[in-house]
Every structure is written in C-alpha cells, then in structure tokens.
Amino acid sequence: MRDWIFCYGSLQADDFAARLVGYRMPSVRAYLPDHRVARLPGRRYPGIWPAPHHTAQGCCYALRRARDLQRLDRYEGPGYRRQRRLVTTAAGETRLAWVYLPLAGRFGARHAWSAELFIRRHFRRHLRAALRWRAPRVAAPTTGDA
Image (cartoon, rainbow, N blue to C red):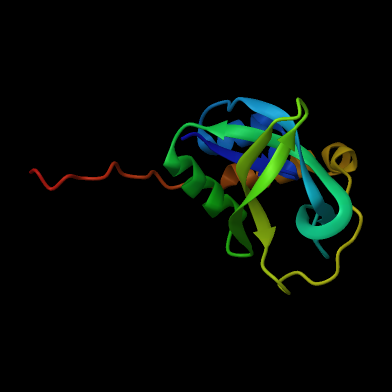
C-alpha cells in the first residue's frame, strides 16, 4: 500500500518537500473536512485543528518509502503527532493520509494563516533555515545473515 501525506503548510511547496525527502513526490490538491489551518503563536508556520464546518486546503503527496515518513517526522519535530485522516482530493477521491497535528495544548491560541502570505513574506527565510537541517540517513535493515 502506498503511503499518502496531507500537507497544509510549508510542505505544500513541491520544491521544499522534495528537498526534504530527496525526490519530487507526485501530488494532488486535497482537502481535510472539519479541520482548520491556523498560524501558531510566535511562529510563521501553521498547525491544523478539528473545526466543524471548516475545510483545510492543502495537497496530498505519494511517498515511495517508509523512511520518507521518518525524515518528515524529524522535520516536523516533537511538537506534532502524525495521525491518519480521510482526505478528499480535488477530483473527489477519498484517501487515507497521514497528517501532522500539533500536540494538544502545545502551542496555545490559534491565529489566521495564509499560504499565499507565508510564501510571499516568509518562505525564503524558512527555506534557508530548513535547508540547514539535515535528515539522518536511514540504514537499510539487516537480516542477521552476516
């Protein structure tokens, strides 16, 4: 089974996400019903919260390898947990995808967030900082047949 990941913040930028996992992932526009994307206090990037009657917009990437999730986990850091949610693509297909949700109470109040504004004002600085980050190489599992 192919793993899908729903991205609603900075990872929506194809080039940025590709640099983190090492290849350009196939993607489609997608929506997460009954959730809302909002900026985290004191940060330029957003989180996502359950919110009836709202729809979070983002994209859904197809991952090739399990270790890609490990790289994205490291990038997202300890303030988020990865959970599966049903997302809907722009074509109307429903997919089970991973979503990074902020830990309850971790970030406090939520503020309006705009992907367009983030890209225009903060993306270059965010990209430079993120590219200093280096995902660890994940060793291939050994079988014990030395």
